[in-house]
Length: 269
Image (cartoon, rainbow, N blue to C red):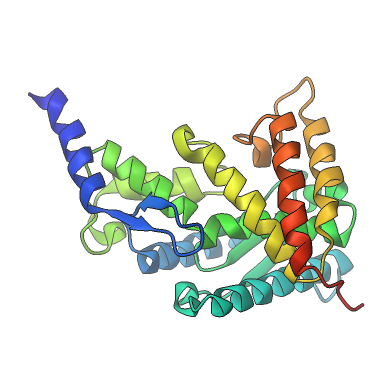
């Protein structure tokens, strides 16, 4: 009987916890409130920064660039959502952009706009527009509730309902799931069934946001080719862990670029 219980619970949770994403229009499982995730993200973000070397924007042009590009992307996203009458979707977002000293080729965004870029990534971005492509992609994961969706899937798979604040109910499983999905060491593809769909969404809307911020979306092709070259014959960078096949990604990007160009007005230096 037990072997049927968890699948039945998962089905019941799925049936009652689906929402339609305001921007993508896709149905998503949503068992955890955005406000709960944002509160937990603040805690985890502060903990991460305290344990790593944060590069000061007052002494580093790279760190200043990360904050400048990040804020332009955030402003573009805010403008985009407001233009759709969806400004409330970004309630609770208090953007933070930090550059952390690390050779890892990675960047991530937690709920509520808590963003980190690793110095190792800048060796691959090589220019401001490519950095905007990355930040647009990673921030889209957050604003499109991809992590919330993955966490909900994990909760449903274990038959865990989300009533109230799941992080204060004394259930260590929920905190473990959060860390597996949002922690800087997490694999993006923890839950594979939707990960590639989410990646395409992040590419699509990330390019639009980068273009709205004044960065040429055409930079996406050479940047992702450089990223993909890093995975040749070895373990891919974490940021590529669940991405689509190279050829399919490039093909999709070319279509997204044409759309994004409609939003593109070069940034004023």
